[in-house]
Structure formats: C-alpha cells, structure tokens
Amino acid sequence: MKARPLAAAFVWLALAGASAQFSVAPEREWSPSGSVPVRASLVSFDGTSVVLRASNGQRSTMPVASLADADRAYLEEWKNSRPITLPDSVGVDSAKLSIDVVKEDDASQTYVYRTPHFEFTSEGRLTQSLLRDIARNFEATYELLKALPWGISPAPEDGDRFRALLVRTRERYAKEGGMPNSGGVYMRSRSMFVVPFESIGLREVGKSFAKSSDYRSDTLVHELTHQMMHAWLDLLPQWAVEGTAEYTNILPLRFGIFRVASAKSGLKDYLDFLKPRGGVPDPYPLEKLLTISPEEWSRTLSSDPKEARRMYFTSYLLVYYFMHLDGKGDGDGFVRYMREVGKKRQAVEDFRKAVEEFKKQPGVEVRADGSYRWPGNLTHPPEPEFMASKEQLQQWQDSTRELLLAGRTVDALAAQIRSAYKRLGVKI
Image (cartoon, rainbow, N blue to C red; front, side, top):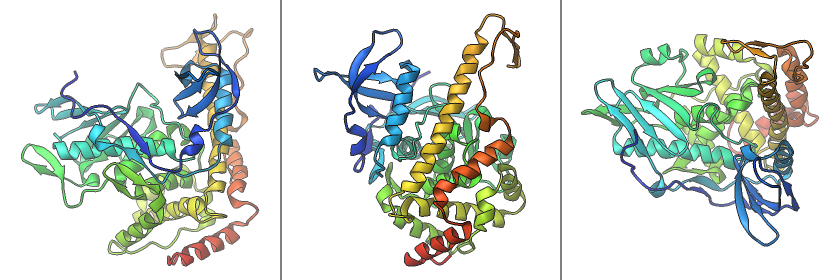
C-alpha cells in the first residue's frame, strides 16, 4: 500500500571535492547483457550505475548489474585508481526528499515508512517533523557512504531497500537480538538493524512520538553505516568495523547534510559530550585493539561496558587519525587499505556468484535448507584462500594491516597518534 507522499523526488548533494568522479576515461567497448556492445567513455560510476559518453557526445546510464564481468572488473580498477578526495559536504535536499507512509495501524502498533533507499518499521506513530528528520538522516548516510573514498557501493543485501526496525522498549530490543549495553544492532542474518526509542531520544506526545530534549541521530548513523558496509563486515577487523561507524556518526550532521570538512569540530564536540558523561576514556591498548576478535568484542560489550566504551572510543580515534592526521593528512593510507579490502570483497562476491551459477548445472541437487551436492564430473568453483578458515582470514588481515603501519611498529604508531592528537589539544 502506498499512501501520501510528503514531498517530491530525492536528490543528493556533494558540495565539493567530488570532481574526480567525473573525469572522462578513455573509450572502450562495454557489453551490457541483452544489448549490442557499446563503445563509449566512462564519465562517472557511483557503485550501482555508470554514465557513459559515446564519441558523438550522447550520454547513457546503465546499471552495473547489467554489465559483463570484464566491465565490472574495469570499473573496480578505475575506482581504485581515482585520486583520493574527500567531499566537503554531502547529504540530501530536505525539500525534495520523498517519504511514503506505507502503513499506520494503531491496533497492531505497526507503522511503516518508505524513502528511496529505505523501508523502516516503527512501533509508534512518528510526528511529521520526526519522520522527516529520521528519513533524511537515513538517506544522507547512504549518500555519505557513497561519497567517502572508501570504495563502498551501498546496496541492499536483500530486496530493493534497506530495512530498519524502531522498537519502543529495551525488552523488545533484547527479543529482537539487541545485546546488553548496546544502543542499536545491525543483524546481517536478517539484513536489517534494530534501535530502541531511547537510543534516539523519543518521547510520547498524545498518540505519536516526537523528539525529546535528548534526541540524537548518532546511533542511527552508526547502525546505518554497518548496514551500508554489510559486504565488508566479515573482512574488516573489528576495530575498523566499529571505528568507521563511529567516524561517520561523529561527523557534524545538520538538516540532512554531513560536513566532512568539519570533522575536526565533530571530534571536539564529541570530546565535550563525553566529559560530563563519565569523562573521556583512557585509550584502549593499541596492540590488543588491532587484533581483537568479534567474539571478544561482543563478550566485553556484554560484560564490561566501561571497557567497551574504551574500545569504541579508541577505534574512532584510530580511524580519525588515519583519515585526517597520518602522513599528509589526506587519508591516503586508510583509503588504500580499504581499497585492498575491497579487492577481497569483490573476490568473495565473484565466488558467491560463481556458486549460484554452479547450482544451476544439471546434476546439482539443491536441498531445502540451502545445502547442495554435485556429481563427481563437475568441478566446484574454487573458494578464495583467505575464506578457508578464521586463521587464514586473520593472517590476511595481519598482512594487510601493514598498509596502515607503513613500516612502523605498533608502539611507534601509538606514539605518533598521541603526538598528533596533542597538537590538536587532545591529550590521550
């Protein structure tokens, strides 16, 4: 059911620093499925579609999913060779953001809302002001992850929209899989994230929910970042998984616009926020943080919230350092690190696609539970070596971390981080 639209079409803004996305590449032949090959130059690529320009100047847009494997490999290489640039600001035009009210059922307390890239369900009716703010923060985070030079191409893992659930109580949050001491959770197995009302700061006003004086968008942005990066979560070390999500949610955000160029003011606002709330945590030991497992992280979060606070805080400091303070301060090392991870992410995606095609071969038996078996005359697609075991994944992560260390020991890196923050007036 589609109900009243609150506004017209959706647009995005990258106000500066994105010119590298529009430099025209040399002509080559493109092979879209179901069509004749096209000779054209690549104008832009946003992760989901490409804009091509023929020699006569005519432009066309094609979805990446329609292109041949060779075309997608070319796009990946083109993206990785782009100069590293950070946008000054990125987000959405609030006046043109479209929001559909899909369902508002008081009897079941089910309220479903839809934006161009998201469908979110709430256990309470949202006021128009709150609905608009949440919707634009959702869409702004989507545009931010596309614009940052990390190589993320946000796409729903299941269906045509990302999904979220906003629940009234911590009890319901726990039933949905939320961990103790957490403010929100992204569950990849369900392709959705869940956040309780209290983590956002909502209050009941009559029959609807509105912003309270404690209203904050950081938890939403944090979990949205995990959701946008779902294909990366199994490959990145835990500090990078949480550090990137902390980095985005601490960037200044106002009226649907992230001010990336003001990341430093976001850092200082964050520290000011922490001071009256238990103080700025002592940094977590760097050597331990770099190798902490997802399982140990989860155990600490459940059992020792003070220690978990240190882990989140230090993960953020680490990503901020690599993005703005390391080397020339242009994020070069971290972006190249992410590009290397992106190559493995693409290898995983290629393997999964090959398996799906293999399952269609005559003689392959696919069972109801998703498992399958095949006759001896067929050769199963080879699994990427780093996927074979946790140990091999860890070995690959350790070797890739050298891109960030750049020949430094962990102790030397820690000393440089302390020195860089000291120059900013931040003692850690």
